[in-house]
Length: 124
Image 1 (tube, rainbow, N blue to C red):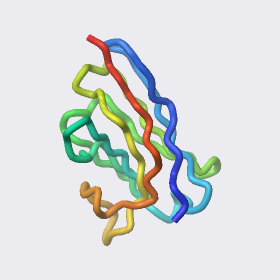
Image 2: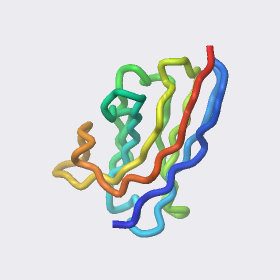
Image 3: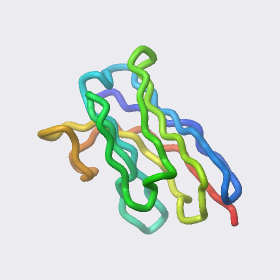
């Protein structure tokens, strides 16, 4: 497994926007669903969003309407556009490739190729 590389996280004020990137040097997003998860200190890794090989998407209720997941197969890069950020979005963000059955799931255990993550901090 070649780990993915997340980038784009930084400190931002409440109401601000960020775009996270997820670069793959091996597997293609045309072969796997891509998921974004986040983990705050002392908490489990939580589902944020996922996009299937065919472009269908699913979002956690807490980010629906504010976050948008996408992929650029030509660049083998995935993205998470995050708008109207609030302090509750502060966490380390990770992307992973889906290895389970069907289109995708919300379970982090069904994903692999995790990278080091990228830190998003939203100040109030």
